Image (cartoon, rainbow, N blue to C red; front, side, top):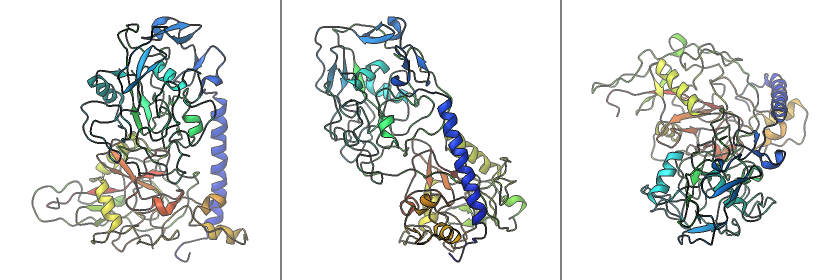
Length: 546
């Protein structure tokens, strides 16, 4: 590790320990808040509402909506004669019909989610439909002559006739449904509908636990049910009772329901006792990937525990605080304008040399002045955790205030893979090396040397054993470049880039705390989850370059 400064490591060990103490305190305070996560957390007859409070599920029949009545503060299905449902649906408690499978597009296949959004279909063996929002799901159901299931219909469909914790029983089975444990934590992925034959109950629905979260009537991104393939704690998040309430999972789908003519007529209402209002934007939900329509082989994984910040090196600014001297889009058809000193010419655009930082950042402090983004060496980068759409908008505004814009996904990939016909695997080449850029494993040998540990574990993810990883000032790794003048395109902090994906952004480049860094540092890897250390860098168009 000859290219790195190791004198600061002892100082970092103390900061890392402080971070662990802070995290432990956060977990303790979370327990003290006594937020419920399932009905068993609440005294009977109350249930766990979507807000995390123990509430009465109903006090009157109207609280339960169509096909249910209120009895002993619980919504119970109405007793009716046997009902008939379409072939692609199943009868639930002889009260309503529910789709046998998660909704998919009409042109979906086993390897593609399709593009025809004219209506929702329920069929086996195809990639399910991930939707942008609740309204899209409702429209798709209505176009098929159905509707979104109410919260109580969904709950009853999931729990089955025996009222179990999961569709298949009361005990978590990691291989029954498609969750984080089904294929292994390094290989999890979305699967075609019906791929898990044991993920069902006596009603005959499939995949109501796992694969995709499912929207319900009058819901939101925070009121989905059932868990997904990418939930870090599938045992907890796949339970039929669990509702996020204060965080928005990724991988959101839906299924449709229908009230047959013989069942009780009535308005579709929210069956959670009116408690389904949007909660405050809370902490980590525990799901790892958040993405658009994923194919069956797309996969990613979660970050390790966070650590502290430090470092220090100095370099003159490119103009005042590294701001571009010639800002904004050049526009027009004139000659190409040269890139400012704090940016690098990629041919297709100008890109900041360094990860963005705040104006008042130093080598030991990320600063607080968010008036605009700067690109300079030797300061802690600007990052957030968790990532959100609001953070993306702040990043974009900071770039615009500097006469630039947020880099686009294709620009980041070009910068990482290089301009040649043979795309690189990593920013620094095709061969993985944990010490070239700032990764979770960069400081394992330093830690062992400082603590006289022999033998020393230097295998991938060794940083988690020693808790020796940390963010560094920009440009601290002189080898983390490709000779173009860009630095830290891999590692240090993830970089947010704008895209046309469902989220409106992608997360690229890897970070200092990523498990399996040899996978996540790859130029083509897009982290779909939100609980990560996300930064950015700015770009600028050039006249005649597009």
